[in-house]
Image 1 (cartoon, rainbow, N blue to C red):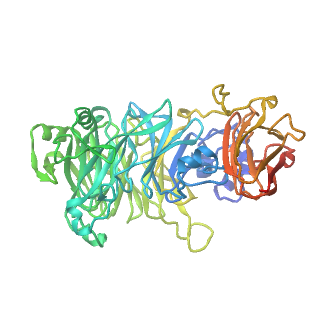
Image 2: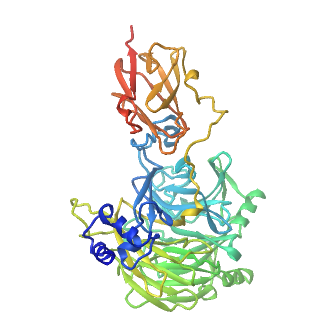
Image 3: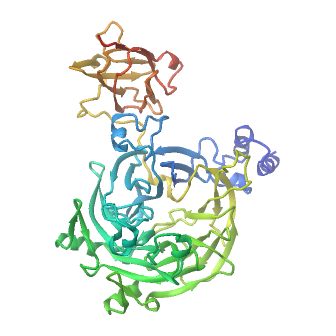
Length: 620
């Protein structure tokens, strides 16, 4: 019977809920990723959990998508740069303040915090190209803790990337603008425009981001970046294009030069410059101008219009992918350090020394007919995996020798690839996910806008093997994959005796009126709201039209997975309160009348009965 069930699963004729649990039982309790068929390898039976978290950026949705690997099931959507009515993100007081009235963000390139070059599972950093912001997500709660507007910049696309002990989070920008973005004619582009890189720090105790310093780079577009590892740990690299300094029709005018640059910089040296006062104060920020303060930043010629630049796990090499010159170029950190020491420069560009290409070069790798290399990730055996956007494939090759080992087609046009722990000093070498831009006709049609796809590839053997193809929410621009046991989320929020808004006993609930301000200190529990235990109706809130109302609601169900919601019918507000959490919602009661309030998150058999009334007396 097991053989028949397994064969049926392989051909997709049964649902996991109907038969695959029987398969697992018949097999004596399958473990994750076991079995002979592809379906069995990605199937995670009830009672088992995925081996990895996959964190994928949500592009212009402003959200973070969390998947399990190998199942490829979406586990959670974490709102970061855009409001989310489902969770009340952007409606409660804290997150509404963080968003600052902005309705969207263009989230690219998530970056996990690191210790000694390994993911530590504590935080995830995100950037917003649209509004030039950065954010940090606490992975204990999978919630956004801080968002910071980064001045003097425009579009931090190639970030974030973190140094190997999370000393800094770097945000170089895609767009060059006049510093401060004051009106300046494009005829003065080369003279007055700049691309600015920002160095951020995280205050982990308060979970707040801060800007340590900025660097005023030439007016080019800065694409992708990576921090050094081990012996190169004090350094970082990033690609740049439009070194032509074109201002229009960039698909032609920004692709004329035979070579662009990799920017190589020593972040410790830059930090020392700031400490020594070698900076200028610009709009309240400490800014280094490389043409004035020499050292710490160098340019390396590379194949034209590069996209990705990736540091190998051993920290010895960095690989640049020139998407219009189909080559992966391998450079040596050691050779670069030697060239800097010996001042083997090929002149300067915009006041920054240019290293001699052949002095830093290890090799150019150009697989036959592999077109459009974009991004490279790594396994634990010295292999590199590069996405080929134009030829729609992933190429596996030895970064120490340049030998091409394998190629696998993907559907279609992969932007980025991510391997299990592939951005760290110790990749796992088990799975790779290709994040594809086009799905064409892979799934049921949903109209002109097709879903994008992610494809799970087994890279544990000599040959790559495609395991699964799944639709993805737009736009999975980039992702990182971390071992699940590195992340330790909490199940309930602990009591916080220092939180003046928290109420943990129904007998402590109260409504306090101070002028036209009304503070409600209430509790939510299955299946009742209590706002003031002394009232005739403890689940009623009475205010006057025009009052500024603050609902401080504590979920006193200290029980895993018992989330409560709070909404007022007709007031267009909603918030979530997790077990043990206190959340605050503030608004002006501008509409007089009778408005039911209710729990929006199904919590018990009497969820429907978890209601009350919000009564607003009209102005006299």
